[in-house]
Length: 231
Image 1 (cartoon, one colour):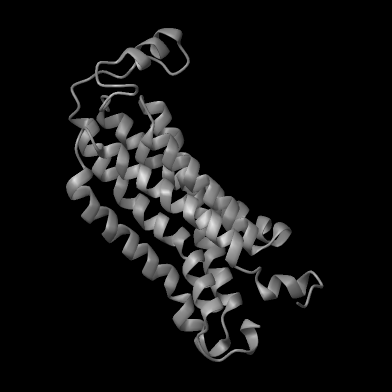
Image 2 (image 1 turned 90 degrees about the vertical axis):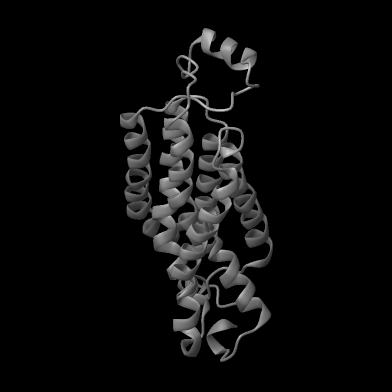
């Protein structure tokens, strides 16, 4: 239906906006690590030992700051490694996503990448040592790289030719909006007691997109035609 339409309609707008939530998450993640790093680099608490040790788990649940503590100490080298995890994951995600989108479809690929965004946000929000934070950044990076491939592809394929430029620009627009939003939110949440909420908010956005996109967005008509389903 999209290829024969020449004006905006509710279905088109809803599909485009929901798919661009992945681009929003990209922009949001670009700024969230900077805000969190300012807190963790200045944190006076030591890391809760090692991830897989029983003493670490005991310290985790007995922390005077709560279950996972207000913050953990992050060195400059650890912060640099955590930051580099996102482009590393993005490289892997970008290389694999094109093939995956051809195999399972654009819609399901976007939803799969949303799971990476969601897991990355949860890992970061509940991290209690640098290793878990790095894992969260790596998972997020897979979502970032994959979204840069499949979101513009989906937006192009669901748009009529006359609106392809307008709809396609949502990808870049959503990235900028995501970065702007996290910078504003970080003014209030960029502190020891609240920096986890910064990542938690993204998890909420990802959960919303995962449900709403799955319920209301159609598969790309181009992919359907390629698969012999001209609905």
